[in-house]
Length: 358
Image (cartoon, rainbow, N blue to C red):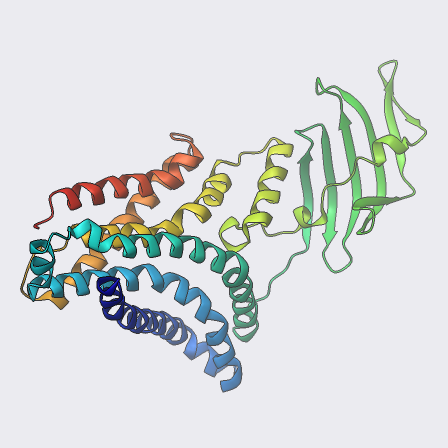
């Protein structure tokens, strides 16, 4: 227990120091990239500080993996250079046994990092982007024109000349209904359709229904059964597509389900969804790597620790980027695209630990 306390007393202060340093650097980079426009638009200091405050959770989320890698790598290398690791080995305590508590904590941190992003980072970052766009005078128009949306695996097709976000209203609407064999069942026209949040469906204004009768398209009575199927959420009709990376896991899941229902490609979105769960485990991987790299050098411990943490982080990010591209184009599954870097680097860490200089 004393060894565990000793290890964490060394790592924890360094981890928090490195985390706040890296987070501050990221926040300042974002500020300096936009400060000229802020000043040009006469933005107040309060607003600029508010943007920075909203960005803090996101920068911490970015900084945690690098900080834990640097702190663990530096402390373990320093202990090796000071012959403390050798003293432990001589007393019968293996390197793995000594660092198991650190691995357990990093594994739990991965779950914490996921929860932190899902419950806090996404919301604050959205506020940061909204406020920053206002200060930079970037106009975000969620109205849309000539909208076509497929639903129920292509059985229902929505076509509207215009969607108005402020009113949650469609104008110039055609709703095409097809049977299981994709044969035309009916077409319903309405000059306007209003989203009803209580019923979670579209209410049509003076709808007109057309059906094929004896190979001729004729006006028939509007079928309430068909109209009641118009339940595709108004959010789908907005001009902007949903960025899976910038929403919570539950919201991303709903969007992917919509793409599946519409029969649209969803490999990229599904890969990003799995990545939300896989990426936080970089915390566990970098700690495992730092343990495996222990004892590689006795000199320039600080420099080597910085170099190793940057190299390992870049290599992991590049590997994940490659696998995500492969998943996007269907060469590998979405699950493999997100999780294969985690599995690969875990294996590398085990190999490094096996051949660590102990």
